Image (cartoon, rainbow, N blue to C red; front, top):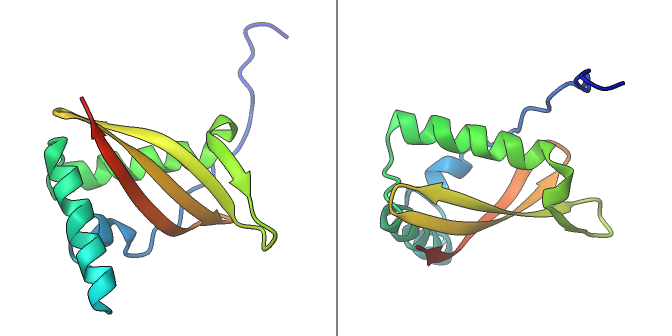
Length: 115
């Protein structure tokens, strides 16, 4: 019917500490810490600093990524889902590549800065 919204339950992402990872706060191996600091630089280049407001914005973005089927870029044999999105900040945008197992965010990569 026209004018009737689809009724569906929005899935809420399980992010764990992935937002910490985006803002250079990774622990563990040197490789993980280096990658985390690189993501921090990418986030800062587009004007997204580690603040409560930015974290809220990212949670909303990742909720939309999880719930938008058009952002699915592929599937793996083990059931994980590969998604791509464009994250915009006041100074430009970056491509996010995320890997999900159900509602759980497994991996996030920040690819390049776009103005």
